[in-house]
Every structure is written in structure tokens, then in C-alpha cells.
Length: 220
Image (cartoon, rainbow, N blue to C red; front, side):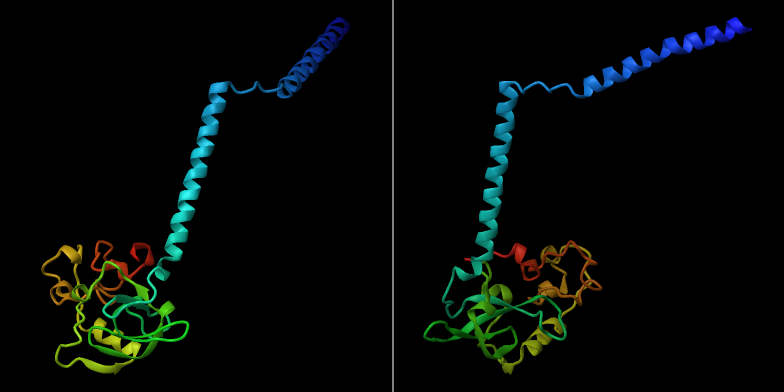
């Protein structure tokens, strides 16, 4: 019985050095110095970094161009189509109201502009920064004709939006811009938050969707 016990301790003592050796090997492996990249791999990495830099410069230029785009045409001219933000209105049907420039009051430094929406002239004057120029829109597209019978005078911005939004409502499920049976399209109007059971229920509608977001707006 005594011999077995001694042999047991002897075996344990023999195992300890081996475990210590393993620990040393692990520490040695983790501290090994990595090999340098081959010239070809280093070249590829440099090309990727250069490509990312060029892409970043391109994106920044596009953002800067877009941020300053509305200032590119100054002064505006009579007949130009612009949009006015409706953010400050109590009732908001759409973010932007399309208008046409109808008059210019020239100042020493900046001009002021009178405008008209589809159903009448809007009272007051607007500064250049209040008007976003829409290069690809014209009076025919937004259906503004100041010579039509019954064209109203001195509408407030809210009244002009009310006239435009309440005039027509559709319940289309597809793209209204391509649907000949759309009541908004057939009446020469565009969709608002009153259409499609509320904005967001018809993501396919693109009927003058550049009035919803600056991201799809083209300036000059």
C-alpha cells in the first residue's frame, strides 16, 4: 500500500514539468513577431486605401454641390417654378408647395419675389432663400395658369395649400404617375397626405415625388 502511494506521487511530480512546458510554449507562440506583408499584398492594400480616399472626396463634392445648389440661380426670373416649404403651417399636406414667380422687387443687395400657386396669387413677398428653384418643373407640369378665370387674389400660404390638397384625393395602390385612372393625375394634381389612406400606405406612388424630398430635387 505504501509503494502504490509513493508511485502515485512520483507520477504527479513527473506531470508537472510537462504542464509548465506547455504554458511556456503558449506564451512563446503569442509573443511571436508577425511576418511582414509581401510587396504585392502591400500594393493591393495601398490601392484600396487610395480608392476609398477618392470615393470620400467624390461624395463630399456631391454633398457640397447639393447644399449650395439652390444658390446657383440668383436672381430668379419671372416664370421660374420654385417650391416653398410648408413646415411652419398649422395643417401640412406636403412639405413643399409649387409656385411660379410672378413679380420681382429689386433691392440694393437682394430681391424679393411675388408668387402664385395653382389657385391664386399668394400675398406678400418672399426672399430668395425661401424659394427652392426646380429646374425640371414648368408651369404646365404643375398646372399653374394665372390667366384662368376665377384665379384668386391674396391667398395665404395655408389657403393655397388647402386649395391644392382638398381639391383631389385618390386611393390608388400602384404608381399614380403611371395610372391613367388616378383621379389626381387625371385632374392634373399630385398626391398628398390625404391620398392612399395617408402617406406611407402606398410606397409605389411617384406622382411628382420631388415635392416630398430634397433628395430627388434637381437644381440649376
